[in-house]
Image (cartoon, rainbow, N blue to C red; front, side, top):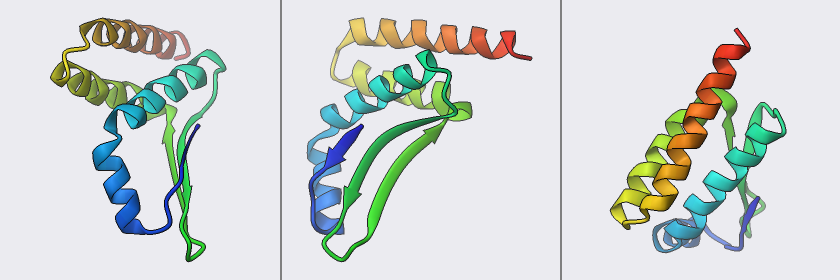
Length: 102
C-alpha cells in the first residue's frame, strides 16, 4: 500500500499530479496482490492530513479490470508497452477467474 505523506488537500492534489508513476505502480501492484490472495478489495493508498482527515483509496474487486484498463492507457502514454502487455494478461486472468466463479 502506498502511504502518501502530505498535510493538506492541496499537497495531496499536487502529489497525485506529480507522482503519477508511483500511484499507478501502486494501483497495479495492489490489484495484483489482491487477485493472487483472492481478496475482495485492493488497498491502494492512504494519506492522513494535518486536520485529522484520512484519505483512503481502495478498489473493490468488481472494478479491478476497469481500473487496470485505465492503467494501460496511462502506461501507453508513457510508452511502457511491456507493462501494458502484463496488464492485459492480468485482466484476462481476472476475467477468466470471475467466469470460473459463476
